[in-house]
Amino acid sequence: MRKIINGRKYNTKTAECVGEMASTYNFNDGYYYWEELYRKRTGEFFLHGAGNGLSPYAQSVGMGSTSGENIFPISEEDARKWGEKYMSVGEYESIFGEVEE
Image (cartoon, rainbow, N blue to C red):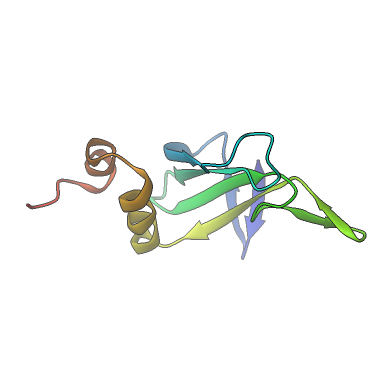
């Protein structure tokens, strides 16, 4: 997916996917969604997510909704918070550096 936001291009084909998560809902459940954390060559982070018709990524259609996807730029601080929640220690430290005990 490619998207221009505030004059900046975000492209899942050229950025590095550094983490991913999937919701605990069954894939066929309307609430199911997944997200991927990307890092651009510039060091910027963004989330790419997609989901079914009742997920946070749903798109409005008439009186209902359908599956959808989107890209959101996020700060390094928010990328770290996302990583703390969804990445293993090894994955996190490979992206953000070693964390003291």
